Length: 204
Image (tube, rainbow, N blue to C red):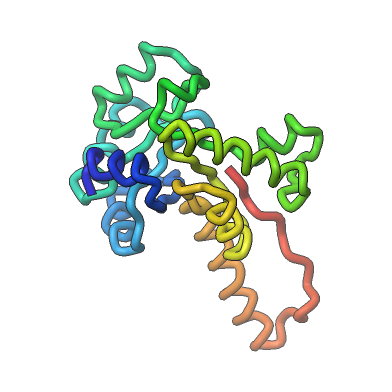
């Protein structure tokens, strides 16, 4: 997919799927390529990536047909220009809905703003998401959310009107599957019980 294809699909209201990429490993793009994604989301707000690393990642993923959308640290036009010059297909950092390609919800930020920190099943949080999705879609913009929950929760956001879904993150998925499989091995070997306390997840 090209950035133009991604834009056309978003403006047409078609669903597109991505994930948050944290690792700058040169082995990562080829692994990600075969996962059925339409784009990747690269976060420079919470992840320590320098300009050269970011540009390498953007060009590599774009070459593989995964347009990179980049979150910058602040709505700074100079920073946005540098990221775009570095190969980003888009920057999701402005608040004006009529100036951007898609409205992207950060669920932790939104839930805290509503006084409902991390209560992602609360009716007020879901109603706020639906309102944002509806307004974005009525303005012919993409309506998206970055979320790390279960399948049912992701489907619910699509049903509420989202058409840009950023599922979890590479580090979160790695942690979850490694912990699950290693726990199963230890349990099968009788080294731990099924009721052993799970460690907390990494959410970005």
